[in-house]
Length: 102
Image (tube, helix red, strand yellow):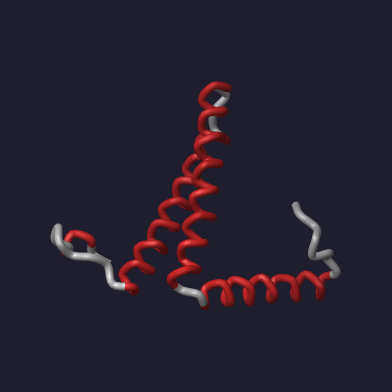
């Protein structure tokens, strides 16, 4: 989606809205990775704590955007659940408890 082609009076179609939300999710994930990099490469406690706080806010934003995406693209939830089931099947094959977190 090329946002520069929108005029002040243009509004998103449903598909535009879904695309915009997905791009926003990508932006939030990129921000999380950037803050993680900063956190891992500083020895300044003040900067680290601020970056951790901001990074965690970005993680919340991902959750908000995923929920919003599920409103406009309901099959998205089904696809996410299918993906989770596939990982759980592989975990079962490997003998890894599905409740195990690392």
